[in-house]
Length: 278
Image 1 (cartoon, rainbow, N blue to C red):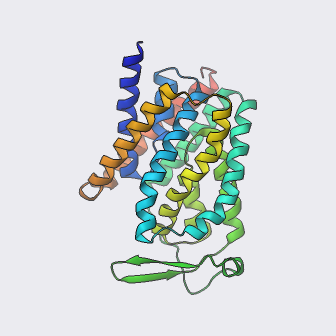
Image 2: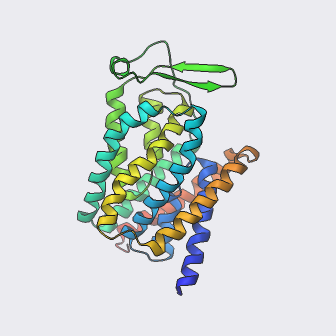
Image 3: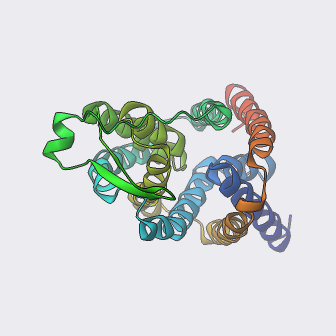
């Protein structure tokens, strides 16, 4: 395959991943890594390196808008980044010692979990009547603007959320994805933040987490500009278009379709991993 054709396929695939990813709430990595490894035969470590760079770019672009609107809880994000940054570096280092086939199987399992999370009915667990001791000590409680006025919320189970974030960071560094599904579980289900605050704060954190693990991949020479550049350009463009289409699109049906596609890719990754083809 010529370099030009390879670049065009990667650009088109990355654009689609960014477009659908922004409409469904999943990052582009869930499509990019299977595309690069299963379809184009790229080494999984280089696929992960390219995906990490795209996560940094998309998170930086979209997080700024949410921070400006006052929905993101920056204090919680920076506090939890202590866990995800350290563990993301650990995850990135671990990839050196793990057989690529095992990484593919783990990636497939995380894809299945992400697909299930995507179609799960969202329940708002927020509660401002009680709050945790550590949340008061670290001043993590906050508020966010809505059409009906400012809504206050309390933060709970800070230790549980911190531990879950540590796991999310390892997965992010190991697989080159934002681990948004795991981060939302930590903030939404465990710390009981409002869903809007959980998703926007998760988006804010993904770029910082990915930047930590990117340093390790860069040091090992596993971020190839010839792959990372078209991936980043495609995902960024697709995510930008997707954010403009978001208000006009019925995302519920799209999420079901995307969940089916992600499940298929997950099973392919698991099968190829178990068969030792990656």
